[in-house]
Length: 66
Image (cartoon, rainbow, N blue to C red; front, side):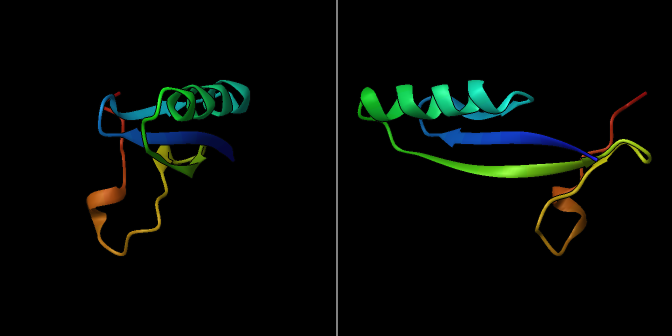
């Protein structure tokens, strides 16, 4: 299982990153510039190629086109 890091801000929208250090740096930079942001972990099952989120509906499940 892989983990992706999701950062949401009003200025940039939703950004999904693979590297923890880059996600931390983005959150730090947003705070330094006075922007608010939300962040979350997105566990990714590499077996089934789906992204698992905490929502109860199928809206939060990402399935790639390939």
